[in-house]
Length: 211
Ligand code: BEZ
Image (cartoon, rainbow, N blue to C red; front, side, top):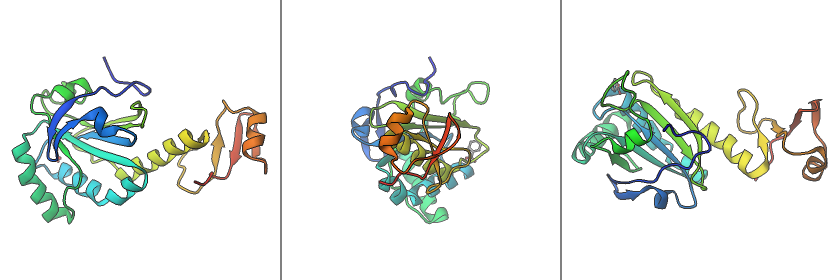
């Protein structure tokens, strides 16, 4: 069955470049990004992993742990890691799972048989500290993902979790946000004593809460 937003991310145990990963233990108390890449020693994947490694401090700032997955062997990950460092200028600094049997890839619907019967597509899940799926995206093998966009979505998800606000179209860090409809005007008054800009009763804008 497909894993949907709001579902608990299935647990698994797999070998990685940083030892055995028990996924739920790995998440414990943090946010997590689990992403698949189709194959080691391929061009787009090389750029994606190098860039993700460069974002280490950005993920850490947000309390996010990153975990990559492919159906390649653990031994191959090490050789490819050297290529990533050489060509992208950043060494792998997060664990890469070796899902050689494709069990986790199938569990997470990362293999789309009509695209490729054995390799994964570019799936990415953002998972909250409650172990629930907050975001899922799927890209084809030929299109590298935008990991700056993943950080932007994480900022939005964390604002929602902490402050009960939503983010409008093309929102960027520091811009105005929206009070979610589930917050009544009474509750909003307590949270925002300075008030809000009300374009419609359902469209209430406030500056981005800090902290
Ligand atoms: C790539 O990363 O460039 C790639 C991987 C698998 C299939 C096609 C492209």
